[in-house]
Image 1 (cartoon, chains in turn green, yellow):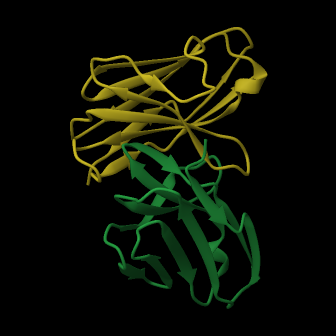
Image 2: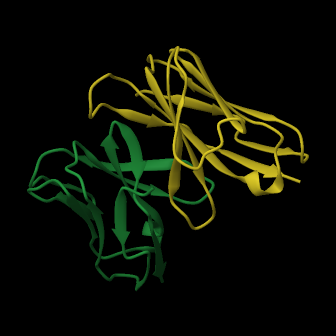
Length: 108
Length: 117
């Protein structure tokens, strides 16, 4: 069963627009990871968040972990076609589970 | 950085045959390895967790006799899809944990695309 719920399930945005993807867990997380993927290809590690309230940024992508360490958001500023793909959050609950995934399409 | 090598990257087999997928940690010892399965437009579903030298722990709904997992050494885990059928066609990814504590770095293979004809 999925321990992590992501929303939205899919997202279509115009190039240049900002967007946010959410990841929610019913359990307190020891570590929350964000990955990008295209189906049939390997995972691209984006960021890892560990501390409540932590925020990290890389290029145009910012990820935050809430104080309770049960919810994370991934924000993309000024989206580009290269941002398109499947975004997955993942959590270390001894077993490592992935969220339900968000498919992002960026229209040029 | 740490590397996990997964082979083959793609395989086509006939229905009824078995297929073995290897996952190797190249420059670290992996006490725990995970196997995932992914269908198009879906997320990665954890199939099983394997610890070196012990039996794998399978997630609910995953057939143990169909998906045989062996973790015989600290650098190698294998997934064998036995008596494969077209519905087993999927993308399989392994990952390896480099430490004993949580969270500790998790490294992923590049996946194997299995097509059963």
